[in-house]
Length: 130
Image 1 (cartoon, one colour):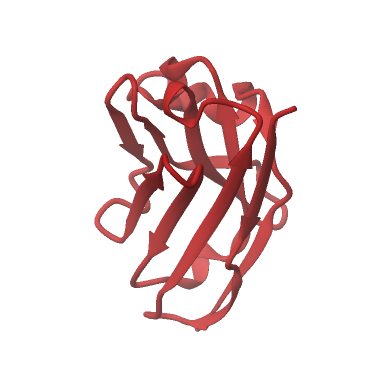
Image 2 (tube, rainbow, N blue to C red):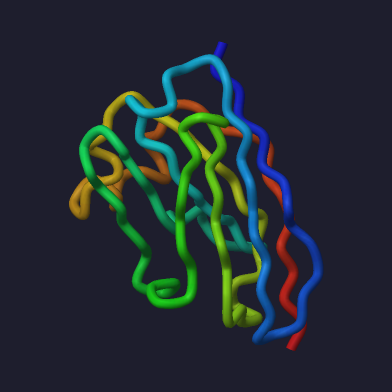
């Protein structure tokens, strides 16, 4: 059974940093597309970043490029999101997700990842105060 659990959210001032973690189990981490998504109040879920080690994809949403960094520890089956220079518009519930279709982490496939990826964990709330 695929399981994902995000953690690390909290309250931070604008300009600050947070690191999110996602502990994964039930699948071979290297073989899957794994990513971070977020949903702000009143808005649709959107992709933040995605990584596929086997396919060599790393993709970021334009809104977070240069500020957020995705990484993974395949030994620990853990996905990370380092978030720097946080803005009030980054406030959202952040989710990690996984799917065996590595396509979702490609530049083209990432457009469809938020609605298409198969496995989702419970989110962690990030609140950025201005």
